[in-house]
Length: 367
Ligand code: ADP
Image (cartoon, rainbow, N blue to C red; front, side, top):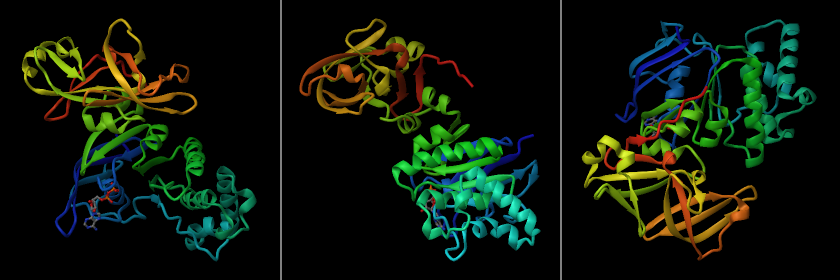
């Protein structure tokens, strides 16, 4: 049996706004689940329903198979870390971390031992006597996490916990959160709009858009086997390139190039004749020059961005635009004309209307 079950969960706010539609998910003990999607897609609302801070309008939330819709936050054994640290400014780091246990009237010796253990996990041992104002943003966030993990609850809920940190602190804290998860093994549900955070932290990612779950899968699966244009464009940086065109004689135009997509469409080629499809390929999945087993595209170089380990090349072909990720040694001249290859196995075709995937050379799933 799964640890947590969300069954057809819906949220309709009192003003009538339907923020979450039929959310279904089974979560195992110890999993690190990330809800990701653009701002306003219903991530926090779902998290707050799990926390017991928001009523579930429709559907069922189960903990160990037992209905939990009516349980209060404490009974659910969840702890939440918010984006604002909400530390008590007049209390030391020690007292901030200990606060929940002190309230519960836990024995002082036990508190001391637990705070020290928690502080050690979080690298806060040398800061226990400090006040929050004498800490960096990252350290404050660690205290907030410490306050949550000291309670040894069943589930940690984190809502954009890194969004108040600067870029460098975010990267450090991200790996620390991964480390804390490895050490505590605690079931974690983490909300972010940042696909990099989702990809690096999650065992499984839930991609949401407009209140609907788009896809649930491992980072590997979402990257290699996206179910629709939205997921394909959301996961990956720079995002997947999309060329939208109607199929004519089994072919589509890409600038002045003609790409024969009939073989990719296979049996469905007839069905798509005259209809619009979206041709997708990732910036990193190309080769410069004319490779075998690939589409060849001639395009103009509009801009290049040297990033050190690679170069992003912005190309145009007629009205179509795309980004290519190339080896820095192969960086082409701006305004030059280049030919690049898109291997057939790296092509994604989506239905132009539903935007769902229609064709993809199969990629084997790995754990
Ligand atoms: P996310 O966390 O993905 O940014 P939220 O779950 O916070 O999104 O919000 C989802 C949608 O629900 C948004 O359109 C938001 O404006 C709306 N919403 C959030 N809280 C309320 C509320 N109390 N009443 C009405 N609508 C709300």
